[in-house]
Length: 159
Image (cartoon, rainbow, N blue to C red; front, side, top):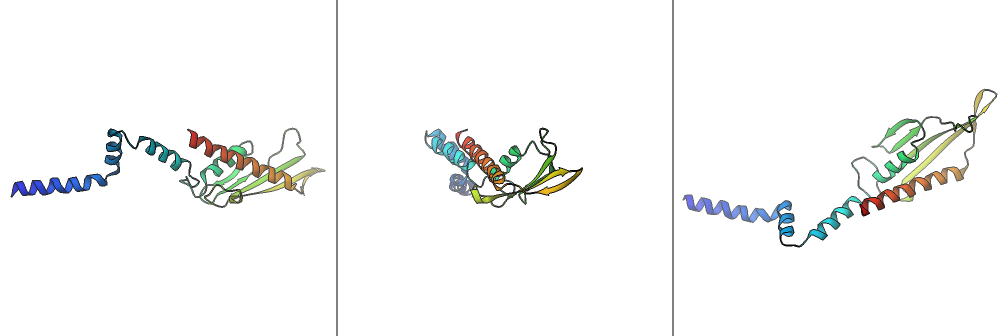
């Protein structure tokens, strides 16, 4: 009876053992195969467009924070994908200030997954008056963020 029980236990372990992913990895390494496949899979998984533990694309989030690092932040909600800056005045032009809101809309790294909105004010006679923001300024800022996000993704693939 004891011998039958031991045989059944050993047989069930042998059947379940191949299902363990760590055993598969160790076996393929020991047999000389799968190492390149495994490292390639890890790199592609790391660089996937949806690499995120937050609610939005991690590359866009990081690139936005890096790009706007010179401005004071009021709000940074990684789950909702919203970054709001406080008013920023360029020291070379203290009579003008800007405030930005960046919304990351998707988990994919795409050009339409992000939107930037800006407000600009000019100091006239001691009070701040709203002024239009040039569309080219907002477009250039979006391009800078997207380029930086793509560079981060390429670095993740290479590294």
